[in-house]
Image 1 (spheres, rainbow, N blue to C red):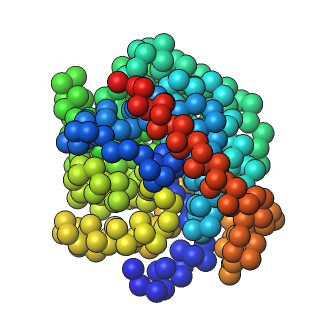
Image 2 (tube, rainbow, N blue to C red; image 1 turned 90 degrees about the vertical axis):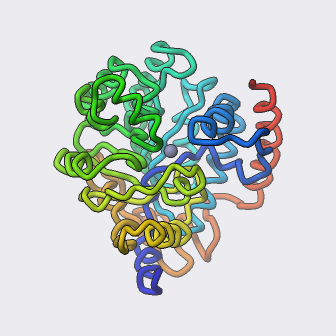
Length: 356
Ligand SMILES: [Zn+2]
């Protein structure tokens, strides 16, 4: 990334358009699964779907505060979060929202409804958490969306209910789409060209909805997404780590932002990864600065926009509120946040061990 591209991101701050606050404790020594998972399905089952089932309120609070604190200090001014904690659904979005509001982070939050652990009952509880949060949230810096985990873990009925709920609430849907080939195969087995076609057929994607990954969508699908006013979020470090492939057709979609998918929210690291990966896969030099800045337009287009952010030397302001001052957090002590995270991380690894 050139110096001027890096400077422009620093000046405007960065909107991380897809991430998972719940994964913030992972770098604090999460034991590697044995045997090593191969392919996205095994990675999900061996790591992420065990981690999310092990989350309780104390672990989640510590993870969210650590992620938000470090994100602010890296120049991130907003997080578009996708949350799942199947053993702690009701009230989970309030806990995340409090971490954001207390430390001074703008955020769009959703619970990602899924049927993978508890069928339709689980999906309804996830959607109800989105509804409850949206209706009761009065925070200055936080808004609510409706979440679906991914097409391949939900039924047509759940997709329809998510779309209807988002329209009723006047918000958008946030969902993983075609991250791995499994999602595409699942949609094809049900008679659709790909998961985007399935989500659209079930009216699950109001304008402005956010599709994470789109690694295995083709050019015609990406043009269709653009025509429907949908956002695509590319996650170069995550796609590389999970070996799911490179989203070669993204140039065909008009609205592409960048996210970190649970990796630390550092725009320079993610921008460098985009440059590296796009060169390796012959995308031909994507507009890195354009994708880094697209999250700002995504956020501004929400039905209930958030206050504007400003980044200056050693300062970060959300509206008139100064949340980073002299290069440090205004609202809390970073060492304390890290100590709490480290303590909860050890609890979380023990809880994960107990899950088959
Ligand atoms: Zn994700």
